[in-house]
Length: 96
Image 1 (cartoon, helix red, strand yellow):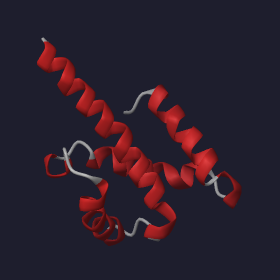
Image 2 (image 1 turned 90 degrees about the horizontal axis):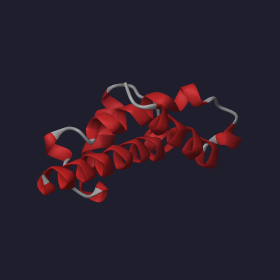
Image 3 (image 1 turned 90 degrees about the vertical axis):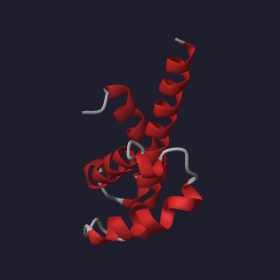
């Protein structure tokens, strides 16, 4: 389970990105979680979003996750948040 701090960032992103569309946060939460899980997969570590987006889109759509155009910003935000955390953890480990 993700920390309350991370979930708070998802809420803030939701408010900025989707808040005025009339949907609830719970509609987008699976997309944030999906992106976070991607960032932990070895095939997506140390890669730019532009290099993985097409693969991620295909996978998202194959899971019937909803229209990619609607959810891609939440997926990317979840991925970027965890990617940064994973990268930072790696830097801390290399300092030990």
